[in-house]
Image (cartoon, rainbow, N blue to C red; front, side):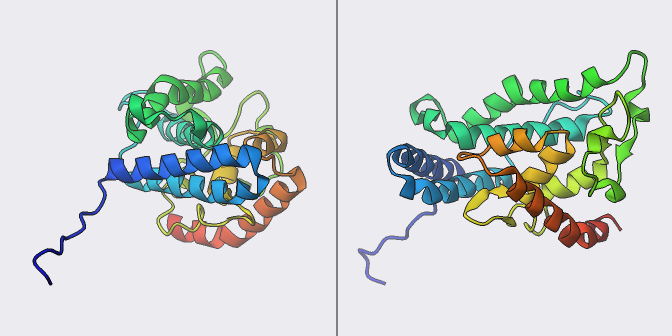
Length: 234
């Protein structure tokens, strides 16, 4: 190596995330005027979300918070954050802070509190949350999981929601609807099994994904991944 040659230092996590966020923001702004940029925008957002997921730096709810619902609130808060980033990436301002600062601020101040409200108000007064029935693998392919227990929203078992969230092999987040990488099985399954309607889920994507497409994709993935989920839980 010549003395003038210099080693290229790898980007820090903050630098890498900022690079991904600015790329996604630029493409999102371009896609408003040029529909041909939509696919590139979606791919850039997928890279950004994946980098945030794998960073290990996103804040969790404080220990002791949301007893009986901790994992559910955590998973729901993360999904709300990722959907928000995908829809509002043009609002990211690097001069106001790093990407992780932005994301963690939103989690603590908005999305974890909002997620908690999805669970606690559903319990009748005096009901111990630890006694609420949770969904099992056999419930994964129910068409309407919110009707399993009248007047209460049944929750994913802690084991299943942990599998979907942690996704040790990356198969849930890397299986997505063709032409829309951000519409992964991981995101769709957690939203659907958290009680969101197909119409609600459809509108979280830009442009909206047709409900028949979402439903068909979800059902195929449930069949495909049921053995893998059982393997993780065994």
